[in-house]
Length: 347
Image (cartoon, rainbow, N blue to C red; front, top):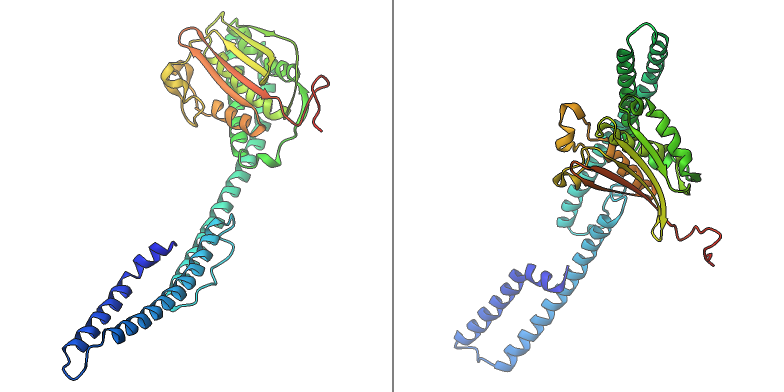
């Protein structure tokens, strides 16, 4: 609290003091038996003014200490861990009691929310791991009856199973966003070592829709988490497959410039409307194409891809032309604390 603000709050006291001065001077001037002495009155006003200044100074210091204690409490990252104890006046004690009660209620509510979220996360993790067992069993059964059903029905069942598994993975990774720091391992790994398994994972879609794919550019090694980057890339490639028509193509390009290493996934699909391009990474956003019955979307895939990429220190961009195709670019920045043999090492 500034001095000016404090004086504004004490304006009533100052006006009351001025009123007493005026009343005193008026009484002395109107009383016949008392000789009105200007010097004596001035001396009296000065003494009262000094007394008022001392009172206001002490009051300001006392209040400033109290307000500084509240400000320090607000600036703490764990401001709910401790209660206020600096109150001195009765007024401050009433406010302190009220604030401490709010802190206790807020702390209790926060603990309940955290516990509820943890219970929910534990349930989701358990459910995801439990559901993977019957999914694996159904896949085995589907392989076993491959010769007993029509080829189209077999592929349809296989595609649906893969979609279910993809949605299950989305749920798992979404539930782990907040605990990412406890579930990653950064290491140097080849990009093609990550790309090829993801391509094989989606091989059925490439075959059924006669999609052509190509991997261009030399291989590069980047610092990342293999499991999380595989999930990111799978979301990007799944989107490219979903919105690319039969006989289309998907090209994965690897390159390097002064910003870092780039992995681009370019498709010849339907493209993204310009109005939707800024929002495709928003949670739950499906856009015009995602609302189409032929291209149903959950609005979570690219949101998770961007969220996980940022947590890994990578960047993700989109460029698209409606009716021509879309390019999703992943950038692995050159880290200042990591250099290869041709670069000047940090001292």
